[in-house]
Length: 93
Picture 1 (cartoon, rainbow, N blue to C red):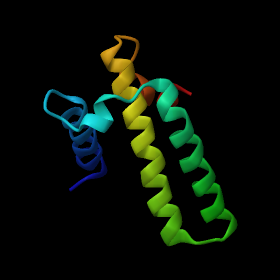
Picture 2: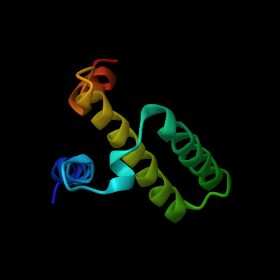
Picture 3: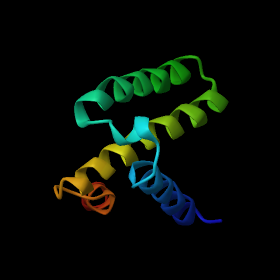
Picture 4: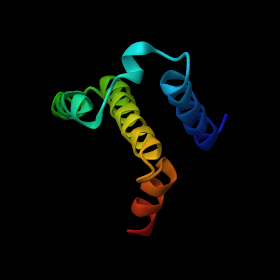
């Protein structure tokens, strides 16, 4: 499976978690409630870098990516932006 297909699968998982009948915890999250998780995952990425633990780095980057997908899903729900917009912004830089 290509990286793009795997990424699309992750987005679909988040869609299910936030959708009707999805996970109650995921459905109640907001931008504000996700802030601490975003910070925690960012710090864990830095810790993996500092310890030069590449196995942990891969895992922590995945956790950070999930936060980006989660926040992008909230943006989509609010009609503010989509994950595609996030990708376009970084690609355009």
